[in-house]
Structure formats: structure tokens, C-alpha cells
Length: 221
Image (cartoon, rainbow, N blue to C red; front, side):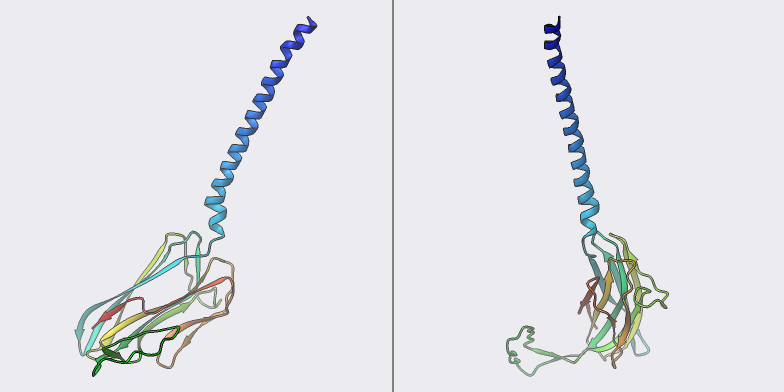
């Protein structure tokens, strides 16, 4: 009896061990799957920097009393995986005159920044319209707050006027500063050029991202 009982116990022990191994494997696989899911969807995106797309368009509306009315449409979209907190945003519109050159213009010497226009010249950019703001993150006295969750968009329309016949082309420049740290205080203010264009001036920090592009769009008048 004792000998037979010993033989019956061994398969039972093996079955228990096998079941325990299977349970551990299932638990480990579930934990790994949860970790991968949490890492890919929560942890990894949180390490990313904000990605913001600034857009603008210009539309001629009409002409009256020697002025051309122009609509400026401006949009900001968060195309990243983390929330974007804005320190400040500025949009500048410049006017230029374009004239035909007497002949082919000689190309300038090669340089790290190179631009060559063979048959026309443009006047220096002249600021014709500017708007901007600093948020509470840059100046606690400001009442402006701009925050964008991933996928969110802010859009605004403005109308401004330029004298008829004064400019041939209008171009738009956007200057913005943002961060993913919602509790950060990043001292900033608006700087204004003698011609009227503005820019966000801020304390440089690893927490901030500067977006500065020109031109975003243009309109021929």
C-alpha cells in the first residue's frame, strides 16, 4: 500500500508544479503586456517634447478709401503627444515692393545662408501689422492662458488694412515659445522694433522650445 501510494503522489506533484509554472507564465505575460502597453501609451509619450504646428493664411477682402482690407487667419495645432503650454506668441505681417532688375543680377558669394534672385529686387520688409501676447507663464500679471492638449487647435481671424499701391507682396512671420511643463515660470516679455514688429523675448531654458519662421505664407496684392 505504501509503495503504491508513493507512485500515485509523484504524478500529482508534477501536475501541481506544471500548473504553477503555467500560472507564473500567464501572470508574467500579462505583466509584460501591461508594461508594454503602459510604456508605449503613457510613459514613452511623456518623455517627448511638444510638437506644435503654426499656420497662417492671408486673403484680400476688398478695397475702399485708398485702403486694401486683408484677413489674417492664424492657427496653432498640437501635433505631439504631450500638452503644450505657451509662454508667448507673436504674428507679424510685412509688406514689400518688388521691382524688375535692369538685367541679370550677379549671384552673391557662396555662404552658409544663400539666396539668389536673378531678375528682381525687393525692398526691405516693412512691418504693416503685428499682434502678440505673453501668458501668465511668462508674466504673472498677464490674464492670457494658452494650453493645447494633443490634437487640439486654436484658430483666430483678424482684419487689417494697407494703403492701395504701396506694397506688392505681404508675408507672415510667426514667433512662439512653448513648453511641456505646466508649472514652469519662464520670464518673458514682448520686444518691439522701431518699425513696429514684435518678438517674444524670454529667458533661455532647457524647458522651452522656440518656434520662429518667416515666411509662413504670403499674398500678392
